[in-house]
Image 1 (cartoon, helix red, strand yellow):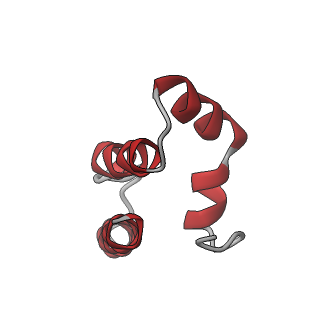
Image 2 (cartoon, helix red, strand yellow; image 1 turned 30 degrees about the vertical axis):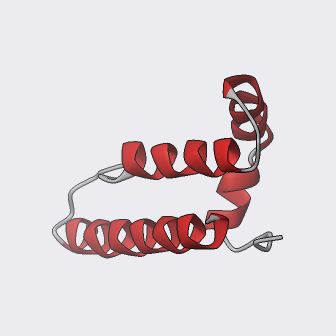
Length: 76
């Protein structure tokens, strides 16, 4: 299940990057469009691994998912 969620997260990130590239080509600033969807998938990953809201908040604050999105950490 976690593998499927990580694949979904990767897909959302890839789509968001494509959208942002197109927007930046038009000289328009944006932070991203699929941020909320990515956060929901990240939360599901934490829940599937047995975590709760406190665990999710801790992981968000530690930047684990940001590191993953930037390819600075592996799936494990």
